[in-house]
Image (cartoon, rainbow, N blue to C red; front, side, top):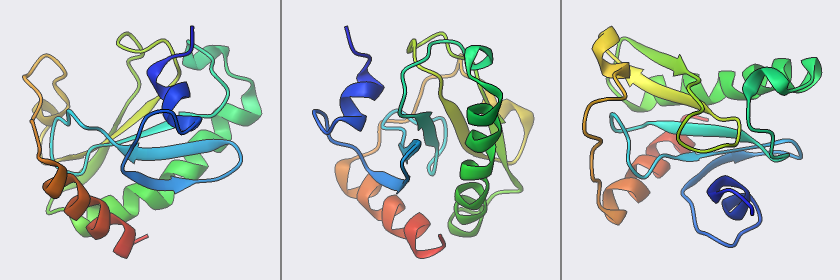
Length: 130
């Protein structure tokens, strides 16, 4: 059965798209740790990040780099943190999270519940800086 990310990639589920190319898709997390939290996923469904081939793994970070810079420009934060946990959805994904401290990457905290309007506004802010 296809993961939720594969369904988003195929257009079966909506997303707040940030960037896309032939290999990857980046979109806002709808249950973010902080406003501006973006997920970057390969279009080919592979569960574990270190099962990716070397070229895809390297290209994932290269694809994420301008997105992280755009997030940092759009959101007041010290840095954009990167996390790969991979337990919640069996499809490789990179979290790009605006952070001011290491605790901002604490995935045990209750996520935010942004409105559709606030997600669309954040999408516009990031895209304006991409």
